[in-house]
Image (cartoon, rainbow, N blue to C red):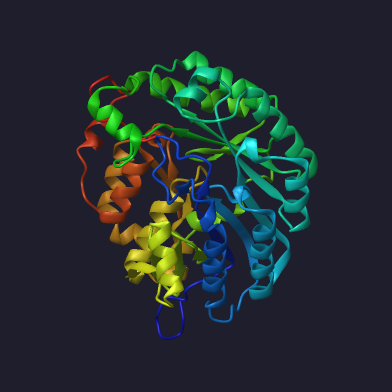
Length: 408
């Protein structure tokens, strides 16, 4: 807090760059992605560079950079070099900064890995999703197990720090298939695994196929069994769960994502990218073509803007932070926002403790093992301080079929 009692907003030390290009839009994807329009790569990079240059003189050194998408490694080599050059021209980047690039296995070549390393990338996040042939086909992925494994091994040699994404809960998938994916992953030279339950997002091809009856979600208990397999097998292989969906070897937690969860500020550029600066959250237009047109017309690409209050910021710090297994320090939130969430959310916290969803000792609170299954609901309660009927379900020892579905 400042002397005047206003929130002392943190200086941004992270940058997110959204590259929207992909070879193909997968049926489950609802991200800001454009496929089959590689002719737009150069104008899009021009627009992103223009947005970078429009950022007021940064005061803080960047400690994390994340190139996401889309598929950043799908960019032409000269355009990727230009993008990194523009970042280096605009920002002071810490010597030990974590610099992550997302990639798909089929884009990994020796020359591309060399280019990434030359530009300072020291962490690669690869969209593997599965090693099972049938599941990969259903998810509309274009690689196979051999391609994925070779890409991971090559990246580990060149980049050193490799993370992979895996999806569980595909239609007709069994826990046995999921365990096989986890075991294959654990044998690879990786340092981080993100596991996500398949969701049917409105507007996606999978959403429409589900409405037509072409795809059916798996049973709730099977999904819970898969989450239990993740919590058992990955720690056995040396990956500690540090957030609801993320497991890492010691000292390999994703520093960029932790900055989000801890309520730090960040810059975001590109279509669909969000920024959080001086207490103001902005969101760029999700449509890549609309974003491009706006920037080319020298208009702001921002389509949404929200100013957080001290109370809103404190609630977000609690809600996002609770997703981390280590939990949150409520006194730290009070010191940075001036809001004592243990007081403003006293009734909610009591209910969450009674429902065995969180535990609290002094200034520290965290999800229980049971609460990990209901993390999104707990976060919603902390954000909006409203009762949720799922809390009745949370009092039971086991989730039975037909009950409200937890978000894993």
